[in-house]
Image (tube, rainbow, N blue to C red; front, side, top):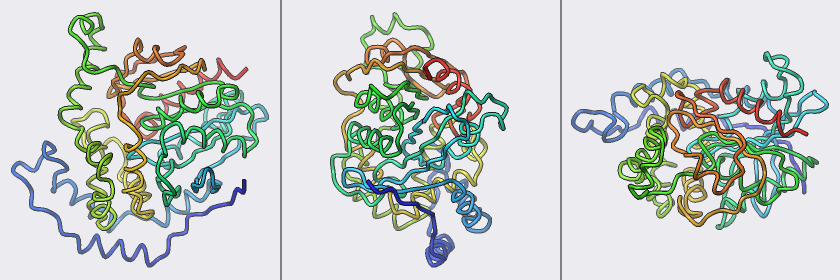
Length: 382
């Protein structure tokens, strides 16, 4: 039950070692065309590596991250790292924010101020939240991974236990990617205390493949989303196949090579930010991209994050139990969720389709995400 204060304090020898590895990195020869069709282009990544080596300032970032109260606690045999920032507003609602892969808790740091102190950020005091941002088991400082079996449901039970330890009797949950699966699962395991579920990207994927006659009943927007699910299965599923079957083999390269870790993550940021034709560092700043990568590098969590993220079960499975907890979704342009299928497993009370933004909502479209979170939880605060 012990909750221990935590500060990030990276030894200088670790940073010196990173600098040496970046300086001595051996990059591959460019493949014909050197474009994104075969993965991250050498020309683009080499510039980002140079920026990482010469301009990125981890010590500045470390100081900024340590301005947020951080803690660790052991739940179900696993160290869990989390940020816990309480609002000064008396009626603030506790809110758990859950990241996904290849993200980390740093996705949410720019939202913490507006969520905990809305008045100072152009909002109203009644929209305030006490914010809890855990690192998923096997990710970041919630490492090393202690055991197998860290499924979505087990993580959800850990989050419910964490909120109990913090003394919260009513709370909301929010997340995207893996966090978009964990958040509804928290409502299933702790439905008497979870007042609302908010997800970006949608709480579930449409069934795939769909028969032609059913596909014809969908709107053009929904048909496009289903088509993009098919494109993903054909063109991008490889990383899931590797991470869910051979995470240890993959980890050797990524934990040993910062350039390898950078390329593996940047490939997904390019594919999943919006618009796809724009380079990821033109959508999200280089410093933010590199800080996220640094969390993986410094903790050596490439293998455990892959193991937990995708070894716990397939993307499509049996229908989930509907918790009955009010659920809202904001679906950005990159996302593929379809409301009619989400309603088969979730009590959808709010659904917002947006024609901009991508998978990393808190980094790409923080204002839109913040506004939707505020508006939804106004209806369920009680």
